[in-house]
Length: 257
Image 1: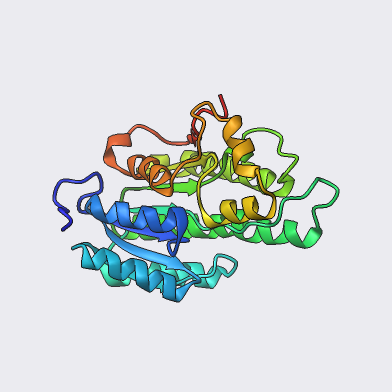
Image 2: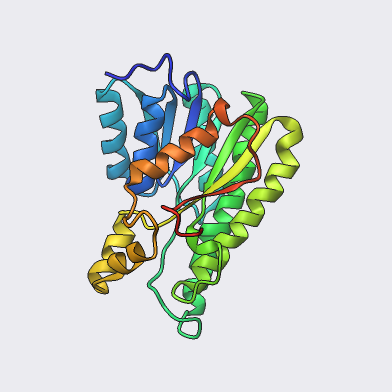
């Protein structure tokens, strides 16, 4: 059973997007183990329900709400639902993201670019606005973490649009940190390296050797498990990171070094 009285996020209400699988699901489970009451959000109702039920079975407190990051009204409604269910909002992890197949600069389509922009940048902007408003109206102070990518930290010829829009998210994170720091709202990002999520394993199935090649360029020599990325997000959301804001933290096994 979960002991919620002494964790990193004890007493906090957390909102997690993309929480039905991968890093989002791992984060929701970890946040609950660390004492938070968690609202899980994603488009995948059945996956959300399964993760939330598992958290409750382990003694945690979780609910779920459908949320489409491409729809601003859906994003605001999901954040409002967290406040409705739990009475407040303290922290949020904006993990949800769209992915498109790997392609060169010239082969990246306008449609793919638009999808990535709508979800990975504009959707995060809408989420932060709604989350700050909810934190301001309830908890008063809080923290937000955006999920970026190690692919945003330098040129990315394999995923050019994805890397560019994640880099824009890093900038948006810094701007939000400056804007809302005076109110006591910290805003940071994490930049995961190769992580064993469904998009990455699917990419490796379509192009065998992708993970092996990425691992060869990673000093620790391996990919991360989703739980390892979740740990970094939990710390940044916790009061132990109380003087950290405006940072994009690589969680990449040293790949960006």
